[in-house]
Amino acid sequence: MGSRRRGSSFTRFLEDIVDDTKDFVDDLIDRAKDVEEDTRDAVKGAVDDDTGDDKGDDSDAREAAALRQQLDELRAKIDELTAMQQKSAPQ
Image 1 (cartoon, one colour):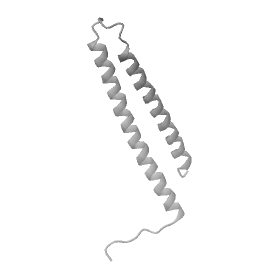
Image 2 (tube, one colour; image 1 turned 90 degrees about the horizontal axis):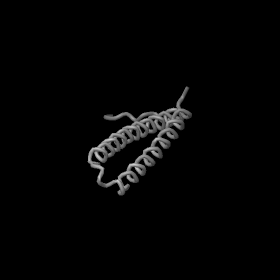
Image 3 (cartoon, helix red, strand yellow; image 1 turned 90 degrees about the vertical axis):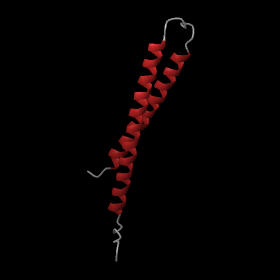
């Protein structure tokens, strides 16, 4: 009547998986961009606020290094998911 059910087939199932993976990767990339921008802003803020009086305090440098490591891990995960998506994409 009102709604028609989409036929189920193996190719449609694969198509749904690829579409969902694509959406997931797009969301990851958007979040990675946000993290990257926030990291840049944080580093710029730390550099701008640095007056040279706190040369012995390296907590900002450690925080920036931790953020860079997290960003590198996120990029590696995105690369892995992108590779998986490309392998499963119909040619």
